[in-house]
Length: 328
Image (cartoon, rainbow, N blue to C red; front, side, top):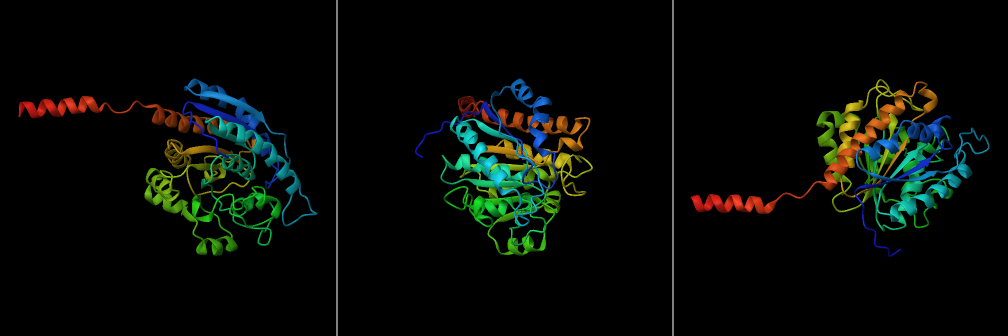
């Protein structure tokens, strides 16, 4: 669609995607409400953003769905994505940065589809412990949360592959996986042959989170192409953040994730961010929600500062040079 979108660096569009239909257990459908209760909207306003809240999509709930063991709950997942896509399209058109509070990982398909309505090409930075490259043919669980990237690049259940009519939603060379620590054998085999770029958690720790994030932005061609960022909270080691569906020890600590997220958020070509897998059922005192809100606010505060900083005063520098030359 030929629509001129004027980016608005001081605006954030907030959307809730309360879904656990694609997940490995119930609870993540409660995440948007918990993050709102922890003050995400008010805190973003307090640091200087104009926040437009597009509300929550209808809840889509976890179920075993034993009738479809290779791709569970597809009907519920697709219904949720249709709801999110509509809100995301409106939010993207406004020029604001779109922040989707999930929910399961599949919700990023709705955000990407909303972005693709207006941007012919978009890249994906996948910040996650898992590659999510299984398909209904290779899955050990049947849970779509383990197959999201595969469907984004056009492999898997037709209901999701064709959710965006012009498959793939994102081309393989335009996806960068960041933070990997868990891979199933079929995923390893596919990734070894794919043009998709990836960076393991161990490599990030070796390089340092800031340098690794900078390198990932180069890999995803962020200076030349708009991109969407997916953040799965289970990329954080369970010692720092246990309130997720599938926690894991090792990997990246909270400080590493914070450092990388700040670098990603500061980039002007970031169009949208979705946050997935926080499970309030595993966070009885709400401390995880507070920690996650603080993480997001810190990163988005750095973004606001980076995008609204006044340009350097070149005239002052020229005056200093001229004065120096005169004195010489």
